[in-house]
Length: 282
Image (cartoon, rainbow, N blue to C red; front, side, top):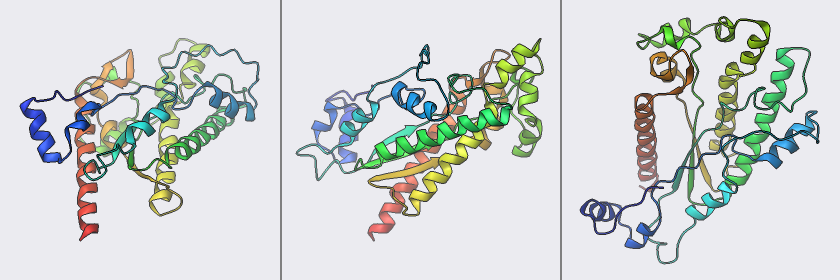
């Protein structure tokens, strides 16, 4: 959590610019909540059992979770007495949940006769997760949700020490994702293990979020929440050089690098939303 120090000159300037009372300082201005799957064990069990998972499945997973994060968010967004006319901007949630939704993590799902059949079950669980999250968050008033798309992994990031020169070059260089992901594995067991990471489903899952958010932007049941899809795929695809541990970890990102780009993009989205509200008020 990040809070502003009362009476600090910078804090006082921010208060004056925002036009909010000092009571707003009693609450954090930024809070990070790390929940890898966005929904919890009981939800995942209910969804996967519909798709053939055993109800006796032993839950060994050690996902980072925050029980009741949706309730925390609802409380953070609710108007406070005495601030109704001043604290009027939306609480903003920047959210992602994609990289952990795979056959590797959802190992309770039954085996299929092909990779395609097994992956179709993962996609089905992901759709239900999206529906759950949207149904739980949509009634919250004065809330904007920016869903940040899941970014791509680069299987051979250790071989690429500079960014691609263009998006077209990145798309060409990052073809045959699964084949390159498993190409250095010593045997079929390891190749199967890596395939089950399902990096090739990231774009599929992003498309599901984008479609659902677009439907709410068109007035198809968005409730009290403003939903925004933040697409980072093309820019991230061009940065195979920016991963945490090239050769070992070609999925997570090094700091600051691409995170600074995403931060700028969030600011740009918020600026455009403010301008849109101004234009609507005229």
